[in-house]
Length: 128
Image: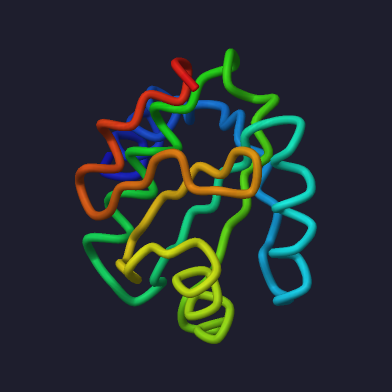
């Protein structure tokens, strides 16, 4: 009886399709590419700590709010625990104090908006 109950619950909860095509940020050289790409289009960097509960909650909310209209955005994902030196270089190159989680929008080689923690949900990418 319990199996049928839980199986019916699983079938009733449909997983929302994600429109984010994450680009792993794993090499410091990619920051130069991001600056070049940002000359023609806004680029987003999402810095995430895989061991932080707040960061996990924020990235889930962000992914759930990301709809089909935004799928053309280039979205870079930085795992802070694996690539801390890249996070440090982001802070230095873009003149933004390190936070986690953190969202940065880069245009013309500069940060045009950034937010951290729960404020990430307030960034309206559709206006950018």
